[in-house]
Length: 114
Image (cartoon, rainbow, N blue to C red; front, side, top):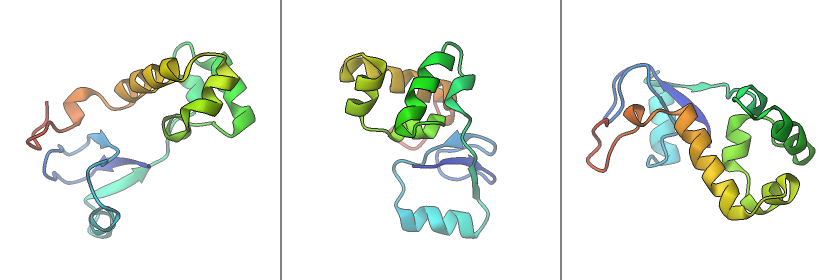
């Protein structure tokens, strides 16, 4: 799932915030792109995250190069390459997502920013 920058305020997202728009349908996302309310952002390389240079080099073997590649990758192959459990991979994904998209940029259950 791509990363988007909010260009105009939309429900639950402030202008300038980053989001993955997990709750939106593909049709809704396309409509937001069509009216320039959002734009797709090139994801940063995984290796630029603090402490991720070596793991990122290992993950390139399975095609994981960017932060989004990592977040979208299935836990099993990642856990095999990093020699950790899938549970640890899931926690690492949560940590990376918090780094990428601060909680204040994601809406709560009512669609309001935290």
